Image 1 (cartoon, rainbow, N blue to C red):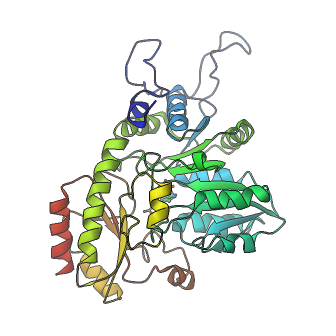
Image 2: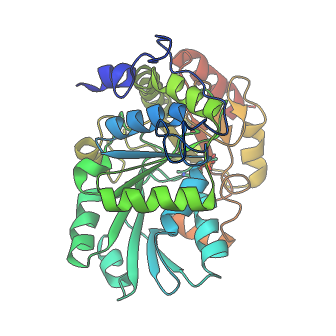
Image 3: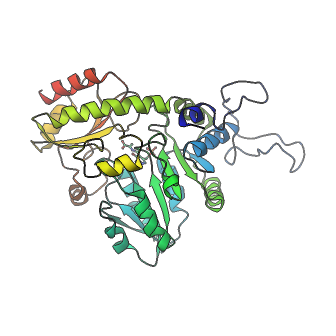
Length: 380
Ligand code: P1T
């Protein structure tokens, strides 16, 4: 089944009790059992929910995996993956990644005895150099948030396999429409489904997809034991969002390319980060690894000050100043003080998250209007 058909049909059947074409929201905490131990496969809604099951099957299909698991948020999903490890284990992660992921690695699991090393994954050798006998997980975010760097998933998998290390790819920025890491050998794919999968900035949600049954069973166990489950209404909203994922991402990618080209030519702009630019250091890798270049763009200003950035950030009319990304509407953000504020200054500067760095999540509006908005804000 091709992707556009999968988003409408994969894992989705009309409700057997009513024929409803849309998956019902099973707003229930428990299920009546016929007699002790005799039931319809549902006992308690932390463990199973029919709305969630449909979404999980759909997620597995989109990522070409066998098992999908939905979570209350992207970070709840991250938390479950780290719980596959134990005290004394070691994680290698890219050093350019969502600030909240950095925070849970360092501030929550660091003190519980799981240490993380953050490396520049543009150079694959840095990963080999960081491997210790205790390394159990390599965490890849690609494209990265907010610098839009790419990590070569196949190259990471090759090293990891030699050392029996799990590879997890945060596929949030690409979405499964543009990139399917399990096809490239990754063991685990994670999403902040809050973003492109939901697509309408109206729900917080997380998703994991794996191929391997043993890993899936462990993650289901962790989820049930720890409890970070999503509500059925949220599952419904993600299911509804996914139906237009391909259309939204396609349009947003077209807009992003036009906006990146506009920014490159603007005299006040220092550097534009977008994998679709031929000057991007991983442009060739993007063509190989992704089916489009995504709809996230970041750029720095020639005047590298917070004040200069603030002027632009507070002058846009169509781009709303807000955290998050991947919705139909365009957003503008300031990583240094917003999404990446939990990363210490020295670490941020190493990866290029300077004071004037501005991040754009490009929506599905008309590109001409978005460009005009950025033009007036840059000239404000
Ligand atoms: O917000 P939540 O659904 O818990 O997802 C966390 C998360 C995980 N991975 C990536 C790559 C992310 O970008 C995020 C959340 N990011 C933002 C809120 C943001 O504005 O970048």
